[in-house]
Length: 318
Ligand SMILES: Nc1ncnc2c1ncn2[C@@H]1O[C@H](COP(=O)(O)OP(=O)(O)OP(=O)(O)O)[C@@H](O)[C@H]1O
Ligand SMILES: [Mg+2]
Image (cartoon, rainbow, N blue to C red):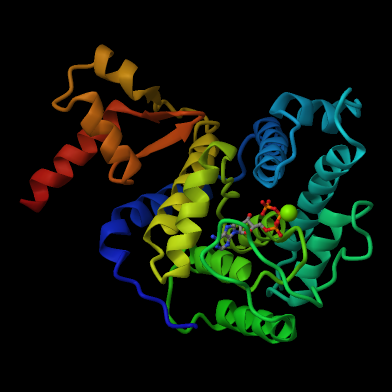
């Protein structure tokens, strides 16, 4: 169970290098301007809450989530439960930041239970912060999660795996494998997805990354990637998490004084600049993680410089 097939590594090395470079850029520029930082944190908190809850089935829109969280407004026609889910997720993120800031921190199962406790609070209080004691099924999944008797032991093994990293994975790979193994174990009756999308970011943020936010629009891709991971193939899931991470890294980098990269939708870029590739090919490079790009809504955005970098690197390799 803890053997990881890393044949994806060569194909993703370019993405990993880019993410590490961007993390360094941010680290060297810290502290970021305080106002910018506060604004980014606040808007990421809302996005993260909206996307994670919406993947789970919550019907509040991004704007409604913002109204509930920032203005304390009740949305007509939405259930009490949906409002609790938004507020609970916000509390869980606040708790997560306190864990991230604790410098002596090492992941413990009690942290996972406490995050889960926030997620289900006032909704399913009898299960909040408690491991399941019965069987579960995941609809659409290609496997059945392990017997409840094994959950506690498997979770401890997973935490050991993250602590000791016997396969020598990089931070992004390790966080992704953690994400997958966690939902495979499915330690709770409900709230596994929301909890692991928090806990994975605890690992990444402790290493100096911003949070990776899996977008609602990518839900199908995310489930498909998990199914591939169940078969031992991590390529798609690692790429998905990397792209989510790159998107938030770019948001932070664009707030740096003097930052002047202009990300544009690929269709616009192709029209405005004279480039050696067409829209289709550039989109393919973006989806495969071969160029610096990120997805916003349904569109991929990239820069002229990203395409130039790709061309230079190709020439060098030949
Ligand atoms: N095919 C799959 N293989 C492994 N895990 C899966 C698969 N499909 C979904 N999952 C995981 O299971 C989670 C759903 O579990 P659960 O309903 O307990 O969590 P939730 O937080 O209530 O909902 P959601 O996870 O949808 O937000 C998904 O988010 C995903 O992380
Ligand atoms: Mg659920």
